[in-house]
Length: 585
Image (tube, rainbow, N blue to C red):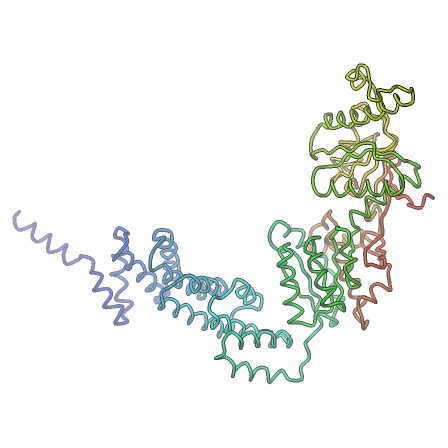
């Protein structure tokens, strides 16, 4: 037995894992195949900062050299999770970038290298990242949108930024976007003077070239909370692009539903391309920001926002147009109809909490007061509740106070507020309202409120609302209480053949219905209006001169300011929506 133990020890020693230095020598001698078995053995040791940390890095890099990308990717991810503060982090992320490029995902690789270049303070790592980025740019494997995305995120080093801009300029050059090519060549030369000779040679080939094909710019939110609506907007526009043929090309830009981003995008686009028209932005805040700038800087380029509803956007300039009817116009239209046609002079308002409810209540109030009417009471409520008993009670209380004052004044009572057994009055009496304006944002909630009117001891001669009422759920929930009610709507499409044809075309193209918010249809109308004016010398004038357009959802009637004033009035008669004339006949 005394001879067996030394023999076993000798056997074990002969098969012990090589040392770190042994492996390192093979790597330095470019014997990567020979180094791999030793690295595979060492990688299984307990991970800890120091020598083992370096072994993992060497193993990742060696696997890349041997084409074992899956193994390299797995260990790189584990390294970044385990060694969160490693001095070799940039080196491993650089390996991840190389793996991405070899896996034909050059954008992820370039973005990783851009990030490494931004944070690492190691000069060797910086030089490596810079060199690899230069190789990616030179290989021309990034698309124009990917290059623009990288530039938007930013390169801290002007030298690398200039290379990216040069690459993007060449990409634009290839796509015959000569104005854009010149724009990016100039940027590249400014940031990286060493590129001056190459830039000048490339720009020389552009002499005599036009700006390229006319561009219709689309500003849509393609990421974030409004991405779904942004996609409907783009799909509505793309539905019509075949008709554009060779007149112009579309350029779709993500404005992220952010006014500042939208303004940056419009400035960049106009600097780079021959933009002849802008469709968008989708939201009022972004549309107002872009419209304010374009009305001053580019009055020859029309902007058509399909969906923005804030009042006053179109009034910013002769080149600004709104297809959607403003909230102010909707509120004032139903108020004018009630006072002119129904001869109502006193109103109550029940408005939902939030910006929309406040805006509609304020505009309705102003419209009534302009015509000498009276708002008896205003009550706010939270939408989506199953029971509005408390809100109706508060409204009844306010009107009872007013009725009491009037009754006492008629009888000569000096105490105009005197009312015996007030609680009994509230509990037992049915109070009368000439009309209540309820600007709900959705038809189900509007119907629910209408159905509770009589139950809460209110007799209302006329229920009034706005476009949020328009939907089957209103009729279903309100039942008999909806009969005779009226509301203003931007468009009315029940049974309309134009909308049906559009909806069928949309379904055939995208295998889904157009959105209920009318984004797709209004965007489709916007591109049609632009197309009709493309042959004109001055597009804003051409759009305004025609004035009236047959839209997907009904007539679009531009005022002199460029706002759509085509408001419909809908009444409920025998359980159906019926369009009414605002002219009282």
